[in-house]
Length: 215
Image (tube, rainbow, N blue to C red; front, side, top):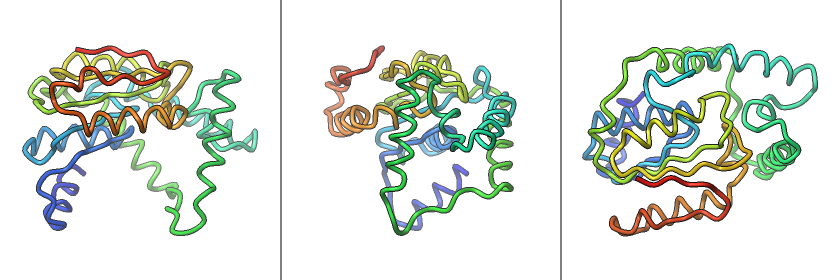
């Protein structure tokens, strides 16, 4: 998939890009930076983890029961997959799902069962892959996640922040895999500040309602 994105960038005439990857997209984004480091100016990794990361290969065991729960409770499975089970998490899930309905045209179609199976297979394979040389990344990197991600365990965000030189880590409280959707306002402000900041000032960027760790 990383090669596909690189080829698409070539076709579009995009020599250098800012890259954001969420979940499986974060796996692809890391691979792009390692394969073509000269093509990425800044990198944002959200709800994701490194190759061979803790618990990533267990995504199927985590996801299927919650998808079934969604069917039985007549709720979108993202309620359980992306958000915590606290009152705050449930409110955030409801608000997120309502926002998804705001766009009335040109909406992406949901994944087919076959596509979903391929995604889960790709995630499992990433979890079994040998670790990559994240310490070779030399561009500014922002990492964001909820403090209770059950799909790509949050400890993987901390691991990436330790291994990528100068990476900035933002962890949102009482939030899960969809932490950037729960704290969408704060995340957008943090991401824009990160993308617009001068390199020497990236470490001073601070979100409003998150805990953060800086290297």
